[in-house]
Length: 356
Picture 1 (cartoon, helix red, strand yellow):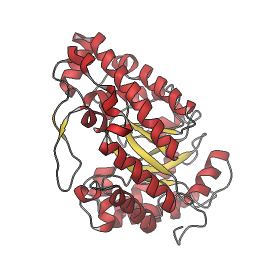
Picture 2 (cartoon, rainbow, N blue to C red):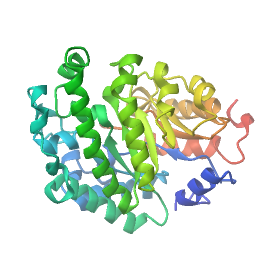
Picture 3 (cartoon, helix red, strand yellow):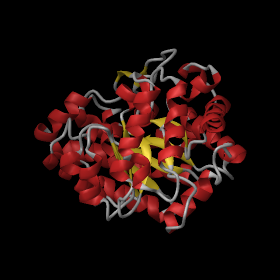
Picture 4 (spheres, rainbow, N blue to C red):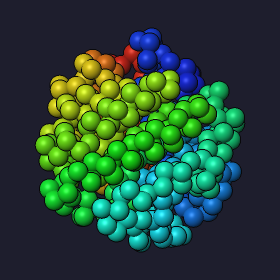
């Protein structure tokens, strides 16, 4: 437990979910992609072994006292397992160089068995990292797994621009591809839930910046509802996040059945509180780039203060978080400040005088 805290993250989360008092607000800078920085590791070094991935998360928790550790199955894991060719950069997240599916009409040729734990070495690595992490610090802090939603999983198999074209030109085959992804994700999610991880379902290609509301309702929400139900059937908990501007669909996102809703910095926190605050806890939404990566500690302090001021009285609860995963070369002192500001402005009981 961090020296400046009076409760462990597990104790704090339990209190939050049951309406009990806490020492401070829950605070989750999503220290996933960049976590290796806490040990001086590059992203390539971090992703090279289960032990390194777990060690990086443990180092972040020991330094920051953040309320969630995160394993990075990632947004391209489904595509990579099915044959999409990935880059291998030293200090950033791998990207797709060649897609597993060139022709959407060949969706029948995709092999679901490649997604099974026994056949996917990357999947095995992340499961092992989850086990190590929960064994080492699980008594104090919950572990989540960052993993794609159905539409983004489809975009890891079939090129995004072609995927978007197919919403008009070939919707039947596109539905078939998304359904395939959904069934694969259910199998993958269940393995992580079995180990005790919270699902961090991230579907950035479903963003309102890319899809309109009608497309979201047809090609994303029905599959997400199905996926959420399966997660709950497996006794899992899920936080739902879509990157970018989701203002037009934030009310629809809650219909998915998610346990918590995470919003990007592009979405107004006060508006989200008004629309869905009485339905689910809200996470957000300190700007991960302009504030946490490019800003200084004063910028971070102000951003945390503003977010708490907007979200603290959300009816179903508010969790301070970055608007998205922290990738790139984020200054570690900015995450230190994020947590220090959370302890300052989010001290319990929350008092508006603290952040006027």
